[in-house]
Image (tube, rainbow over all chains, first blue to last red; front, side, top):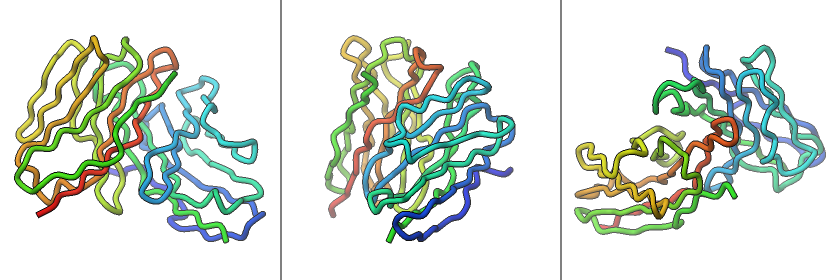
Length: 118
Length: 112
């Protein structure tokens, strides 16, 4: 079946430009996460959507970052006025997100978008 | 806080056992997870343990849970070169709408 997809797979942009990264979660998954992973580093949590609840934005590093999730499905992460330190792989993950055992919280990760800011 | 802590690096000799450690924060977490990220790939669930268990074994993998100390470990027996990866532990933070919190990841390297 279809997994989590992300687009574009690679994005090169000039410093100061805005970028939009897209995530298509697995159909029926109510939870959606965005993470950032710098080269060889761990996961940095950015934002968490759960159903119709207000998103947990506690991981967004600055007000240049924002995300939305339309219709409980597709999500877009927007970075305004990109900086070189924004260069990283941006990962999206989704999970069933409803109580129902360990595997209902299992996160399925997309392949990521590699963002390079020049 | 919401920190899940892991050491960043571990190097073991091929054939030896690897033990990757993690400390977590939420004593109400019912499930704790280990994810594996192979080079150039995404994270995939490796195994998990229910919080009322002390140990779970799955072939070469053994998960140990010490709830009192909030300490989780992953033991890989007979470590092979294919086990080279970054290993992440994760907990569920029920106080935050069941948000999953990942540790920083432990990079396991295998030497011949």
